[in-house]
Image 1 (cartoon, rainbow, N blue to C red):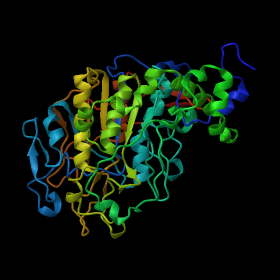
Image 2 (image 1 turned 45 degrees about the vertical axis):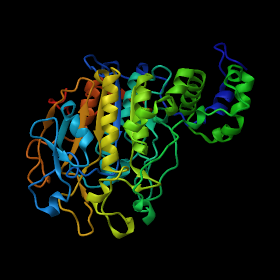
Image 3 (image 1 turned 135 degrees about the horizontal axis):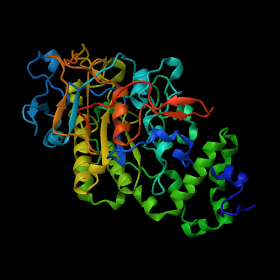
Image 4 (image 1 turned 180 degrees about the vertical axis):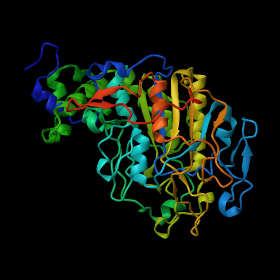
Length: 469
């Protein structure tokens, strides 16, 4: 039976809700009102998540005077910040360094991928029993501030990184409930760790036209969008795709999925936000015709369309294996890390895509209102190992912030002569999370209500980085 508001009854809700659109439609009315404060300049966040541990010494924190086994074979180049150097594979970011707040003293006490990734994604330290209990930063933002302009409150592009072995999905809403999980644009989960075939790493051409349109937005030729305005046709068109909905054990998640699916399908400008073919060839070339280039361009399109929190997910991959986890142990079949860094799917491609994103946001007038943050869970060992790789290194790493009220044109902190330890006070993933919340006007000390109506803090430790905002 049709409801008075023109939507479906509970049975129809269950049948439609299995589309993979998990995002909040119940914003801050469910949260502690004190959590959302004033003063944050950022209206959106682009969270550049490079899961796996990006090498800091081969990118943003070179040590040209160190021995070769420390500095590697990459040359250091000047940037637009006087006296500050990046490596030769970062020329695009070097040209916009004066638009960055570069954090060279990112530091914490874990070298474990899973624990460190959860810490960075949520701002909360966990043990092995808590890998899925803590909400991502994006989930907190979605819970407090809700969807906007018809777009889910937390979107992951594409949301397929699965560290392991075995593979773990760390893109979770934890104690907030599954309706606050990110809306992931799709793709297949990646096999367990260290599974890249030799020929994958032998690829030097990073050209890749990735289809990032959510499958729920792709209508067949015999189901024109106009028919979706009628209840009977909507039910018919979704019936085949939604046969598994009865297996869902979370009605709230199904409810959120259902409403997001209708909103995305029914709004042309929202559907268009996911279509990269709307962009010019020259702009796509500027970002790079690579996976990371396309994903950064998608993030800009989504923010321009009103998205609140967008994660660019570029980590473990079916084509290239573990992008950043560059131990170069025999089973990985990786080349030397300084050779790997020059390839378009590694640091060189990341550099091009990041710089293009920042330039594009600025030229379109969105950078002032969009906080862009580059994050990875840790750096890599200062000394190159015997296989030509670098291992896990939680004690030092490099991140950056820009836009959304950030004080740019500065380097915060420093590491020693071998990039092994901060020589200044180190900032943790909790401090980074607190800074993101502060930029959005969210009180990181406030409390929220979980699924059991318990009062839990936005963050249990950490403070905004004072130099950033």
